[in-house]
Image (cartoon, rainbow, N blue to C red; front, side):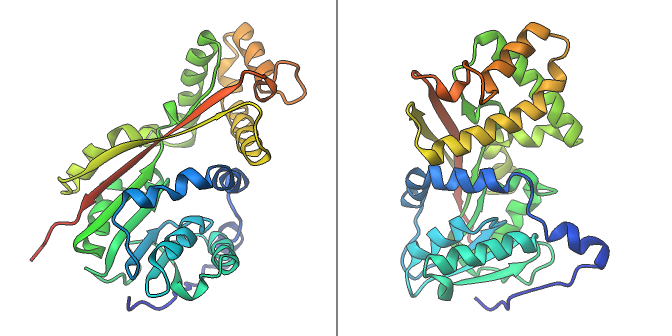
Amino acid sequence: MAIAETQPQPTSASRSQHDKLPAYAATLTAYHRAFAHELRELFDRLPVRPGDRVLDLACGDGVYSRWLAEHVGPQGKVLAVDLSPAFLDLARREVEEGGVADRVTFAQGDLRHLPIPDDGFDLVWCAQSLYSLPDPVEALRRMERAARPGGVVAVFENDELHHVLMPWPVEVELALRDAELKALSELSKKPQKFYVGRHLRTVFRAAGLTSCRHKTWTIDRQAPLGPDDRAYFAGYLADLRDKATPHLAGSPEIRDEFLRLVAPDSPGYLLDNADFTVTCLNHLAWSTAENRG
């Protein structure tokens, strides 16, 4: 894997912004802690072997980089790429604490601006970040070029509409999903990207990866919740409250019921319900890279 650790120097105007972790970082950490057992099993589904070379695109907090490094063993190598210096610092600490720092190289940048070698990796991996890339189809094409012929391109992604399935009252859930879409439309001119999970095979095919396979990856929890589970779902509910509440103003009864269900100090707080159940639905798609001759 002939690539040096890359550290572009941001301008002073952009440095402070890039050095900050995004607001969702704490919830992401809780997600990885809560679901570590199920998420580690992802790599049993993929043909990752000891000694393999892996590219972890948009590595974030480095949890997947660490698990991949454990999976490929002492003879394997992982290149972890992210645009955020703050996330890269977090990822370095993660792999150091895991005792696999000698197997992981970090690079700041993206697929368009890094000298990532063609045909260089046995697995090219992108977890819950494809939706954030400017052009998912072009990103997958570049990911395929980075994979060796016969290697694997894999994406683990969500679909915001049915990522976290909670036991909402039906009328609340219907209004909530509409409010969520309106909130996402304010965040992006392309709110459909937040629902990419349902379209992964289409995106793979558009990128020329015609052997795409798809599997839904479910994670179930029920009361009583452990501390990591509770931390993640509490963060999820708080974020949903902030996004959706302004768009429920036209239905005050539904808004009030929703706020009762998501307020930690409310007797109706969802996470305190003795019968609480929840399913997280994720999507895993992967394809063999074509032999380009």
